Image 1: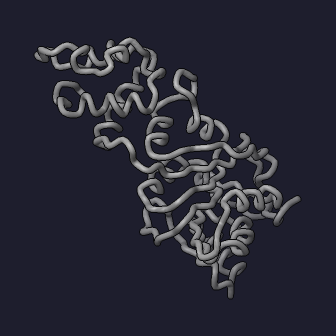
Image 2 (image 1 turned 45 degrees about the horizontal axis):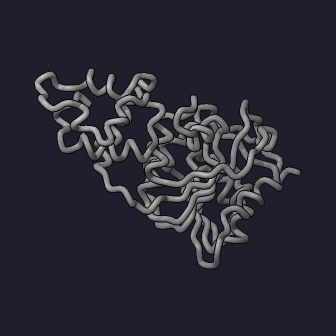
Amino acid sequence: MSARNDSRIRSPRRWGQHFLVDATVLQKIVDYAMLRSGEKVLEVGAGTGNLTAVLQHSASKVIAIEKDRMLANLLRRRFHGKSQVEIVEGDVLKISLPTFDKVVCSPPYYISSKLIFLLLKKSFSSMIMTLQKEFASRLVAEPGSADYGRLTVAVQHRADVELLDLIPRKAFRPVPRVDSYIVKIVPRARTTFVDENYLDRMVRHLFSQRKRTLKGVLKHAMNPVMKRSLEDVVRPSALLEKRIFQLTTSELENLSNCLCSIQSTFKF
């Protein structure tokens, strides 16, 4: 069942826009958001407004952001007179965002990573998003798996991620080459305090050699004048024998704290 026929809308390919048209899936996304009275929702990549139209019945305010001028104008016409819907024309990665309580959206695939990290710097309770299946799988990957990597660690350090539902590619127009997932992302209350910049820099370096042991990677990056052994620096020292892609997010957070105070010792 389609919410609206968007087959005639042509969005620039460079923006990777695929319009979600399946009414059942659209309602499911809004249901997963569990919106409460008074909540303000941020929708990124509103497109032709199919999700916006469902959201407006549950949210007190929908802030619908759309970069494409033609689509933004279409949205203004479609929701003219709807005071609970605010259309914002602009690039979400560049504009100043208003305050919001939840994120509910089906954004262009190509901004998925940058968008998540941008939003995780804001204050809100949860995100319900549609994401490309392969990308979403990387967000929940287990240590030691092929999908586990720098992206996994960077997101899991900041949030809890759950795959809620598979969306077949035929639910979109134009039909993309891949299926998608409805994903729930909840910002994590910080229980482990680390130097964020150092953690990101360390993880980026380590995962550039993901199949090597931690000991091998650190030895290669270590300043030759260092007099202390790695076993004295890294706690627990058993981590040194693990391969990089086997290290958990928690282990990498603790490793970051071990190395941060002597960060000039390593070339990363």
